[in-house]
Length: 69
Image (tube, rainbow, N blue to C red):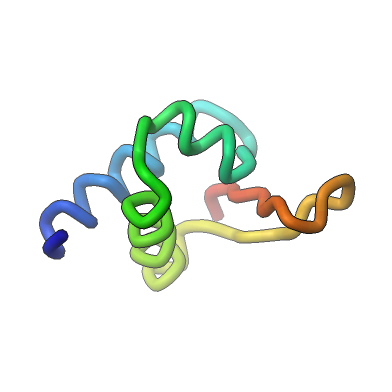
């Protein structure tokens, strides 16, 4: 996986989040059809650019809720 692929995947994640207020990681995987490592690399990219907020889910402490800033 190179930077170009990670950037393209970050775009997929950003588009999915722009259509919703917030999504859990499981839902993002389903919508974007990305594998775990692809999704987490994309989330890291977006987090580094301060484009997303990451919070824990009150109902499931193992799940993260991702939203655009």
